[in-house]
Amino acid sequence: MPLKTPFIFILIWFFQGTVLAFQDDPPQSETSYSSRGFQFTSADGLYRLQLAGRLQFRFATPADQDPVTYDDFFEQKQNLFKINRARFKVGGHAHKPWLKYYFEYELSASRLLDFRVMVEKWPWLSFKFGQWKSEYSRERVISSGKQQMMERSIVNRPFTLDRQQGVTLYGRLDGGGLADFNYHIMALTGTGIGARTNDDNRLMYAGRLQWNFLGDGVAMSGSALEYYPKPVASLAVAGSTNSSQYTRYSSQGGGQLVGFESESPGQYQMDQYLIESSLKYRYFSWHSEFHRKNILDKETDRFTRLQGWFVQGGFLLNPKQAPMGPKLELAGRYALFQPDRELDGNQEREYTLAFNCFFKDHLNKLTVDITRFDFEEESINREASGWRFRVQYDFSF
Image 1 (cartoon, rainbow, N blue to C red):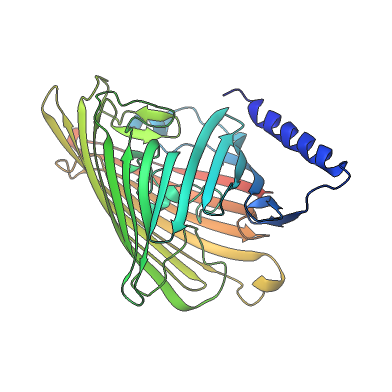
Image 2 (spheres, rainbow, N blue to C red):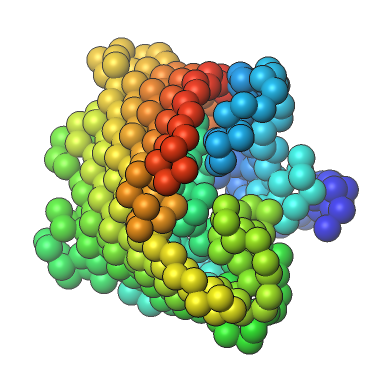
């Protein structure tokens, strides 16, 4: 989709609104603004259009990307400033309040990220089809604009399912008290963002079950920016199985982990699962994930077992002053990734400390982080380490 496409949509809506404004008896509608952007609702409530945008500016030194290989620690050092994300979002409902739609476009990369239709007539049984971020891990599902840390951990790269095309059944089964669950059952192409077909005619199947054992789940948003007098918490398990030519996924589509280079249709059988916890209490938040993944190379019979996990938490530094001014938060994360569990001494570690200044919660915030990376390959007797410093301003409208 060319870059100019979203602007064509804007012009169409602007022209339509102008025409209606000059009619003798224009239909009554409601216009408002919320955290989802500008909102236009028809008088009968059957149609709603939400328009929003987000800009994210980032400075990083000596690099922005996480190091993946030993050589990455010794590349030429450089400072950079960039527009990291520039998003245009459209959502709402049409014909019925429970028939919803959403699409999201990345302007800086000219890439259509999300396009989906949701049928949410019943809280316990809903349907979704299109392309979106698979509901697998909380870290990936949380929007980049609502993260507690500036960016996702080193564990995300090898284990995320990222965006896929497909269908899903989902809902919340709320029986009160301990009997409170969210579930997702997915059938996906398994070949990444923008891929309309599966390379070997075998779909990716995935599922997620979240137990809200304190009676109310934790929303898919980082940080505890409001006061939680009672704790809210969730435990979740998720799993996936797929065969394709890829061993990892990202916002650019299917790709390969280090050590997996060839790409034959259906070459790699991947099975993985995670265990996840999340908690918010008062002005404190907690999030952890434990991942395992098995990859079978059908052409060579090579079997690789990967493992990774992280823990992160944060708290407001000025809860008493927060209602009257910017909210200040201190957060930290520790992450570990093992690319091959048979080689215990081969590990990658991340230590990150972040400081957030929320001018308008996640809609207008400044983030500063500092990270140390440790890279160990005892199998060939080498190691490396390095530091990174970044500043980011995130603005939504």
